[in-house]
Length: 93
Image 1: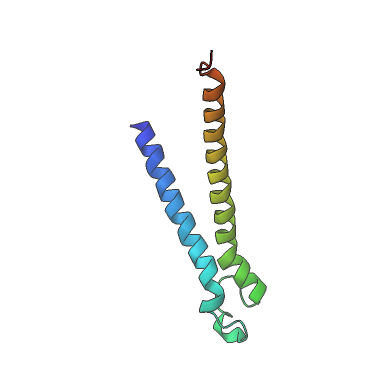
Image 2 (image 1 turned 90 degrees about the vertical axis):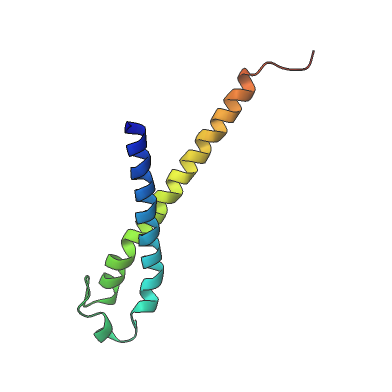
């Protein structure tokens, strides 16, 4: 049951991460960066840099976290395959 709960949390984490990444990608297109009135009252405002940091920062962090997790997972699989090759008996005589 504990493994199932961890799996569910991982799936929810990936979904949240993908949402944050999509939001970060869409943010510059949602606001008019040339008109401060469109983002003045947003979180991080009234400066454009603050608005972009608050709205895009979590997406950048999520992308880095998902990339790192995927890289660790693939590296773990490679180590398992390499270890299996080392431990497998040779078929040549």
